[in-house]
Image (cartoon, rainbow over all chains, first blue to last red; front, side, top):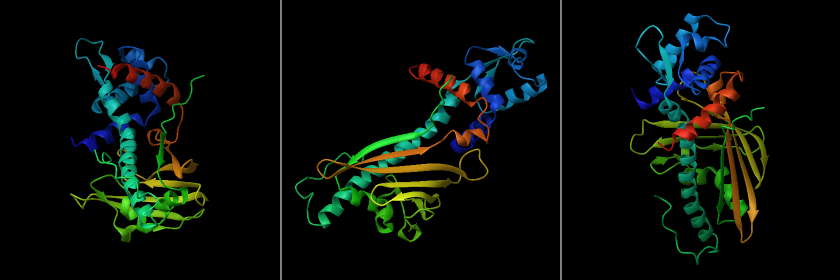
Amino acid sequence: MKADDRLSVIFAALADPTRRAILARLADGDATVTELAEPFSISLPAISRHLKVLERAGLISRSRSGQWRSSTLETAALKEATDWMERYRVFWDASFDRLDVHLRRIKEDRGGEGRERPARKGAQQ
Amino acid sequence: MTTEPRYELEISRVFDAPRELVYQAFTDPDQIAQWFGPIGWAVPRDTVEVDARPGGYQRFVMVNADDPGQRSPVNATFTEVVVNELLVGEQNVEGIPGFEGVATMTLRLEFHEEPGGKTRLELRQGPFSHQLEEGTREGWNSSFGKLDDLLAATRGH
């Protein structure tokens, strides 16, 4: 799966409050379908459907052994989602490096207030 | 009581230029085309339109230099404008993963005078959580508060 597609599956899975609550419960430790269903007034099959969505997004894994399948939280996928917000920070930082250079040029054009300052390197790491 | 996770980006940066110049860099189409976007992205001048007043707009398209087919349009409507001091805009962001329509975020830019003819820019952008919520806040606070803690704990591994 392409990174964007994977991210869209993760975000779609996170968009549902029940599924977020399931993830929060799993943050306390592994749980079976029955245990996960307890706080909700919805059926076991409905919970199973939610688990399937979470599993497909890579947000949880489910053990194959026995009839008491338990679910485990997978934090890597979740981190990918929060990292997405951090990318905006990187975007702004890079833009502002360029704005620094741009402003220096504008000041020089307007009468040399900034003339004595040598151009600083390191804005484009 | 759980505190609500912010999911809001905050950046503070000081520029070595007077406030009017920094403000103009955000509102003058010629200037936006010269600096906006990270390295490797260009903003073609003919895509930039700005009307800096409440109800006005700021529109432009970022184009990937290596792959000009990759275009990211930015479309904002100003809700608050104080010349040389404040720009607040509602941004429509398209192409958000997992969301059919257009997500809306607020971008707030405050321009503060600093000694020595410098300017401190305070940027706030968000909330990012809206893109995960689909209109309901229930379950959000507790879920993500906990998950945040968990992520912080696992990050070191």
